[in-house]
Image (cartoon, rainbow, N blue to C red; front, top):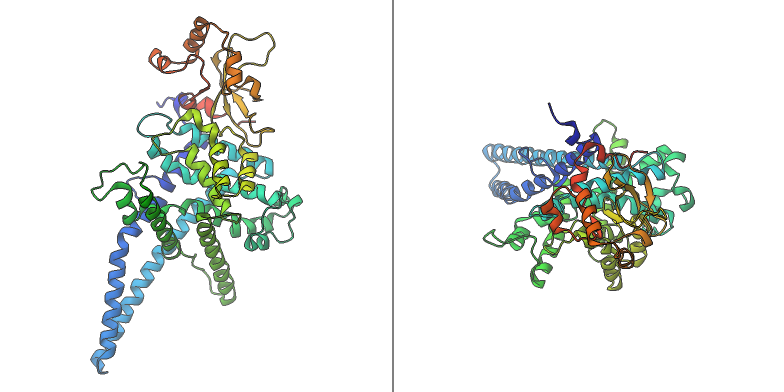
Length: 481
């Protein structure tokens, strides 16, 4: 019988399944990533077959018209139409697969209210962080796989924030919003459910699609030749030379757009009404153009709509870094890097500040060590996990306590951890340094499972890594009300 203690909750199981179906690898080879790779690998053969058919059609057409040449021409044109229909069917199947995933993501991180959407998004972001390895040789591979989903959720919440703050000037989004004012946006889904669902279809699903597909071009053979080397033996997560980096960015953009237009395309209308079909096709075409517009503008967004994709992309690439320099302890410095990008003109400072308002400086699922608030307690610290978005102050994360009196607990309380109590901050840690080494060793002995692990830790840890804690079913319920 399976050990229920270490089994995942339904939510964690669903998140892991999503991560596999988006950018994972499996025997079925049916993730978004694997479908993209398959498309790129087959493209030369597809193009060769189409070129051959066109060449033969031109050749027969140039001959003298006889019954035989007419029959040959009819046969070739039928073969070409059949092949194009097969390609169209494959494209539509890829589109529907991606569409269903995007709908699932939105259902998983959005609720019946603005507050509930933020709670569910915090749970999804936190779960991704908590199941991500933070040490060892699997960090880069896992983070590469997890980033598209993580980025998608950030994009959705950032869109909400920008709409509320009246920072949206993009005509396509403004048109989709209709008469919904910034003041009314937070209750949009409750006040006008039908119109809100139309907004989801026109704006939110294309936004998630763009987040998932943004770097699919890095899996084109030309990109992989740069990343992995011609001999396929290079570490693809190494720091690239400037010329290679520029070449990769160009290939990624070109092949991502090509895959979006020719590999995903628009959804096929099913029905018999010409009027409905024309209306459907027009809407689908506009959605495709919007995705293309987002991806294109994210390359150099300045103050434009591309920031909606670019800023979450930078945030995700730091929190879920694939670089050798990845250091869990430094994750709360993510906005130092984002602000530097804004100063260089690589993204908008306004949008960076908007995201900071949502996430605060401590990523969801991050392990915080803090000094308890009780006045008479100054001889211990406790563990907590960042569990909610929208902290009052970016340096004051909203957390669920993971320990009480130096013992792990299944259902902690939700608290705001102030800077003066958070051992991440140097001044707080200095104030706690009067505790004896013997006492600090006693605490570590209670909170850490084995001696070898303890030896690697700082005597006074500025943070903790809750990955092992999260493997227990009861500890995966941090977001329960």
